[in-house]
Length: 73
Image (cartoon, rainbow, N blue to C red; front, side, top):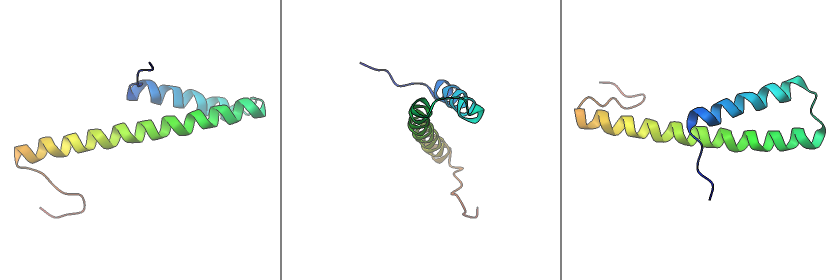
């Protein structure tokens, strides 16, 4: 069973992938595999950020100081 990566580990791996792809030295098949892995890691990171934002909203809501996005106070 595979455990889910932490946000920090996923972001670090994503940065490595970007460096490898930007170097332009990977063979086509490897570059495609790296790109695919990068897309998955991006989705993972975005999901973790979204979850963290929701948790913060809940915490602020409990404190009574919630500010909605784009709303006025």
